[in-house]
Image 1 (spheres, one colour):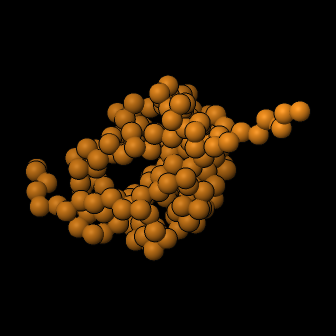
Image 2 (spheres, helix red, strand yellow; image 1 turned 30 degrees about the horizontal axis):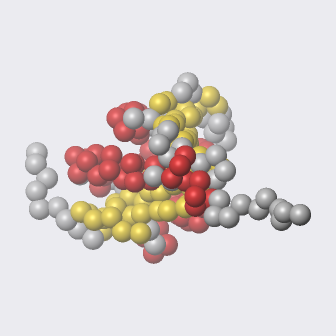
Length: 178
């Protein structure tokens, strides 16, 4: 089925988007945030937005469908944590989502040498999507509150180091001579 006539946009994430996403979140995303941190979807979105270096909202026909971003794990080594929480509408518009997600993954990568996070091992759709984007998924291990299994996923970017260091080291302090 072709998805014609869909108006797609990406805007800077705003706390006002949390309600639309949190109220309609995919079951797999709800289960994941609850298992990992015991948070409601609204709490997880609020936390993720506050901790992110940059975050965006994906809109379809001006309705928030997903919020995604990247937070700093370690700014000195340029390691970031990518994340995305979405609604059930992603599944309806999956072709549009796939096309856009590859572009935005590369945009998030610009300031990082390594992107790393975890995914619920029960979330087969997200695992396939992450592999399709080019992430490596590692063996599952118990990270959830009740021992739920999660997989670390990561992607390396060797071109990033020279791009990220200038934003961190504007003027290093080496001490004054003499």
